[in-house]
Image 1 (cartoon, rainbow, N blue to C red):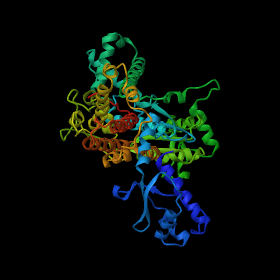
Image 2 (cartoon, rainbow, N blue to C red; image 1 turned 90 degrees about the horizontal axis):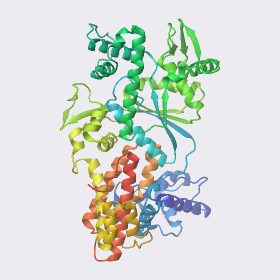
Image 3 (tube, one colour; image 1 turned 135 degrees about the vertical axis):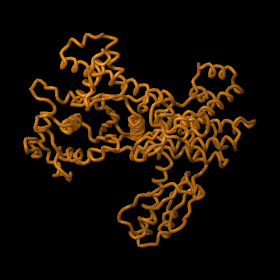
Image 4 (cartoon, rainbow, N blue to C red; image 1 turned 45 degrees about the vertical axis):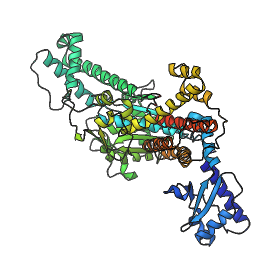
Length: 576
């Protein structure tokens, strides 16, 4: 139980006691309403319960606050509690309560801040880039966001499966295959022009050249339709493999790669997933025929117009695939679906919400809309790749600045805000680069632990230096878990412990709000608090008790920094 939970219990007990003796006339007990004061001078926590309860209790807020304070049970958690302003209850914790946070962190390690199980399975779908070209930097933002969101939600207690939807069905694949075919013919010396509807990027020529180098000109002897079909399959699979390779190198993995084509595959009963979804939606009364097309009656659920499922020519629309795909997800037992889309897809949200409401699952879909990434180099906008003269791909960005900096900066702002990503800032090795600043704090702590080991046990220090002993093992052997933490009373030490104490609350809120960007802010604040502590409080000192306590605090900070970075998908180097 963390300090916030303990405070909640104390305030609830005080309210119950005040109600029991008649001091407060309340039919039901309100929530304690704990929040962090904006000014640390006002304490560690503030409760708003008095202001929210005054009308119910028929008393002024300050009277309610005084009643709560008077009925607080005896405890070893609170040092000072007082009424402030219109009725805030300001609470400052005992130093021992903050010191206990250090011990808790070192005991729970990577389990610190982990929430209890939250009922229901979540399907988180993201990236889902068309396999008709390389991923752009926007896809990179969704890769970082989706992966970090899944990590944070799991730490918060959710059961999350990550999914990539492969758009491997439809006319865009035919256009892609045709484009590769034309480039192949041109490389063979044929005079053919690219059609108006085509993929014109240099990568298309690269694919065609690969085919030519591997197979020669033999495909010129193959009938056009057969050749285009072969090129389509070969090219899209190559693009998909490239996407998988780039994402894997970025540290983003998926539990499921779901093929759109599978929705159209006929099973032993002679029906496909699309057939079944269409039939079941029709049985619910939301499918009708008009002007030779088949429609979904989405206006029944607030959409601005009904949506076509099957065109007059018998071609299935993208939305028909989405209806079948949504039906499939529900059939797999997911209680909540989260999709991460680009902001340009905002007009698609309502029809999908309508579709799930028609299935009998209103509110099951949650769409996170993300804004664009603007690339800069030393403050100047970057429009084109220096290498290709075309858009900068996600892979090129990773190659230049590395996955850690890419991830961290992609996660530095809320998804509903655009990101200005300066490539040169991301490459800097100083405090102006936020990921470097945080990673350096972690590496500095590891260095402190190694230096302490040199004084304590040269043999242990040598093992740590060679890598025979991990930094976790070093800390455990160097600093006993049950060491005395009472020397941690300096204001910088208390400030650092308060930062550490806020981590469980951060995780719960970030998981609930799908807001992993908050962890980047927290990491920087924690690193700043550590650097301030390190400036004001020498760690390696003559007083053995003080040194041991401060090493324990350093170790707890290291654990939380590493955990925070891990939840963002960023490494925590032990040396820099």
